[in-house]
Length: 362
Image 1 (spheres, rainbow, N blue to C red):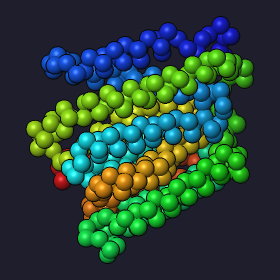
Image 2 (cartoon, rainbow, N blue to C red):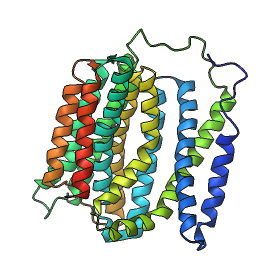
Image 3 (cartoon, one colour):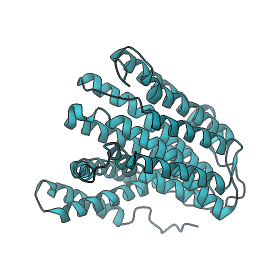
Image 4 (cartoon, one colour):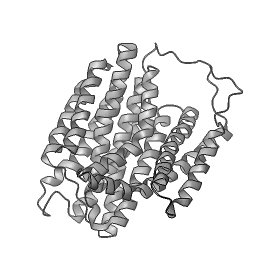
């Protein structure tokens, strides 16, 4: 039980972002390789601080809106980072949005969900969740994913795995409609579908909610931390690309690294919830993030590409398509009954490891 004299805003949650901001301000000077290491640490700590502030806001507003806050916030990072790199890189970043979004979906579906199921299965043997909400999320997710990452390979208006301008606008609008419909279901029409259904969850009955002041400070801290993550990641991007090129790894690895950075907050929060036998919250966060990642990122990136006349390739290759459908098939089977054990987590994590290995060693 939280004591009333326990602050939701510890001093480190304020000091660390300020220090990270100062470190970023000095990034324009050539301080050598050690400074890159310091920037990397600042990026990691900024992500962790963002998690903390998002969780404070989430506790204050409750489920399922709480998990939605972090999902949308982190998707904002992803969108801002992709767009900023597209504007700087120009034609060389035609595949960046596709690689980053696909990597995010594979990390969430296989990595985060798999880790949550494995952790929960090891700790509690069996976990339960609301089948209706998860089924709705998967239905919308699969539809948007196929329309944005698979269908471009089979259209004929343009050469290659890309949409024409009118097709890009149409698919962007459709993605927003599908995601918006899901949000209405999650937050208004069928909010109860996304609430924890396990009566055996052991939680404090007298949790002291954050004050309005704490919530406001955390909201400001969350925004500031997210901005720092974008700025620091953008500053580190050239060094990351040089490192990938120096070891002869494929360029798509950059998308995976970007996705891993921006999804770290969700991964931490989802694993925390799973460790407390709150699998519903884990799945709300993971699948909600997957939907936000594809449903918001693609329309935003499409708008930027059309406005600045930048090339945008969305269709994934045959190898990725096979892993993509395998992932969706396994996660649909794993979440079909409303009950999970560690075996589903192991299978999903194995697919995730295969995805990483095949990306590095194509």
